[in-house]
Length: 516
Ligand code: GAP
Image 1: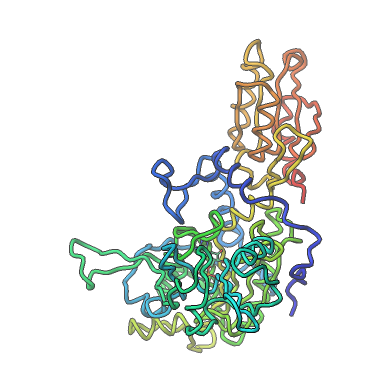
Image 2: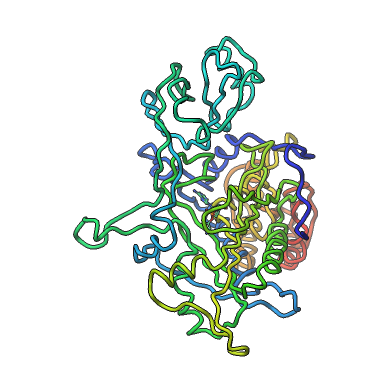
């Protein structure tokens, strides 16, 4: 297999750089991400994107769209690929979710605790079962660290060492053992229910009546609208096999345990490509897309030492997939393990076959050259836009005790919400008119900030914390020789350049301003 050599799990040259709490705090302090309905105490699993978070998300979205739809990659034959975009409805005919398998199968095993009233995903809870069958069995959240586990074993199991236990996720534990397990948030055994399947699709009612016949679902993945429009696109566009259809948009899942900030949310955004090809060519295209996706993550400045390409074992594949490689990232909350960032799945002809059967419409493709009719196979690189944003934030977060802010965000300039800040040294004298003039000239070309008030150190600190690659400072000398200082975010080094040269300077230095 030619996809990139992954770093080995638990064998990292880089450890997780920071505590998630610090990232969450910065996101709120600087206006990247807020809890949804914050003034009402929030609502679990929902988030709002603030002024800078919206810009950052749009930049990631635009970069993906450009790489897929505007300038698609060059294919193995040296020709540019054909990929078109779509924007389909969040609510579709409910029959389509029966066809896709979501009504019957989009389930997670779920366990309730009768005492704490908490609900857990059984595959996210580790059960510690005493090897000798003596004493309490204890359950822990999958993210609990070793010290936390030892402390609880001390309290509830006389400090027995972890080696005394067999460890299984709760969904693998025989149900007759449940009464002896102490749940993660309680002190006595027997409060956990047996795992039940829980459908994660949000539903609503279309029209005035609210009976079963009006029930509809919010899409749990964006790709569905692509399959439903396969025939429309083939009939209306000039695409020929192989080709792709891309879509970016909201998806909704009633996750049992939303967690880790925006990582697992109930409302999120996805960026999905469905690549349709001849069934004989699926392996070639699978390899191709793994390479392409790696190149894309690299192109947005991510530290590839924090990536792991996980070839998913057959038993763990989703119902529609015969092969999947998950692109995983070393998030601060998962370290030293990795967690999923993107899935690249070979979906075969599953979706088109199902929709053909359920809709009664022919969805096969007629090759105009060979006259062969077939249902194409699909390779699907699917990434969460909001999860990508989280990975970008974690990757960029760089603690630095040598600067007043103690931290800066090392965004690739293409993603940075603001590409430069224009800072008059003082709010008086002639600094402000010159700064305004420069701001008006630059803002036609780049998103830039004009920040006038507060002392200059505080303003640099703010720009460091929001990841602005360049700060142009206007001082007394500006009015005598028309020069400004440029301060570089990563190095904090300053140099003097002609004010007229600022735009060219930005253009020239944009690609080299990232640390990775
Ligand atoms: N169409 C295939 C599909 O949806 P998935 O692995 O369920 O596959 C693809 O989701 C990507 O969507 C994930 O790799 C992740 O980045 C993102 N994603 C899935 N569930 C999410 C959630 N609850 N919150 C945020 N992102 C999510």
